[in-house]
Image (cartoon, rainbow, N blue to C red):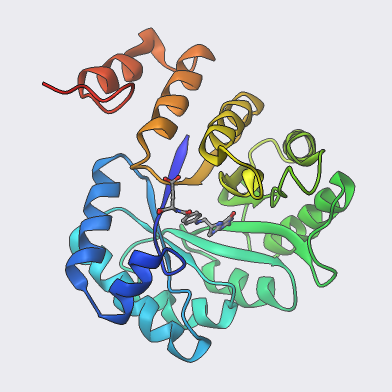
Length: 269
Ligand code: THG
């Protein structure tokens, strides 16, 4: 599983405060801890008013890149913002995200043409987030074909089917699985990603629901996850699911994680 660490996000109250106070140490610590926990990319999301977004993102990017070598996942709803901060990235990472809304693909795809950058592609368009599988697949096809014009191959695209809250849509998880299977049949090398927390919105015991969602998504073949790599219970779920599915030779990762005391009940000396 490719882990995209989600902790540097201005929607989290403590991070919002650190951004407002320009507390470099707080952000730096989140970068170090997530990298140490095994994150492959570090999401950076300013979530500030649009007029401060570019400046805030560059500030976040500089702190993270000063602290760790882990590539960034540049997270903004605004493609123009991503375009403005892109040059500040020291190494190729992930763009989060494009979709069929407005001219996002037309801004982002030429920008990453001929680079090693990858991109998260949300399956929504000017009509919003589809509730059915077919529209999600249709939107994916349009984005993959647009990407192809810039020599961006499907293996550089992480499709995010935008999982709805289960409490609002009973078919949410099954639609995610079916979208994943259909787009992978069409494009065998494409990647599928998801945040882990939308599924449980409006439900009690959210973390439990999120953990079980992860198990099913791993089984279905999800390639990357936008998650909290510091969440011990979530890590336990991930490492266990991968071992059970035969994706952890000799259960080595599982054993090492246990030995390093990063999974299972916290052991106190
Ligand atoms: N898809 C894509 N990008 C995304 C999302 C997505 N970016 C934003 C969001 N969804 C993913 N990021 C977060 C960041 C923080 C939290 C949830 C999603 C969050 N964090 C709590 C915290 O850190 O305090 C608790 C985390 C925990 O322990 O589980 O709630 O869907 N493409």
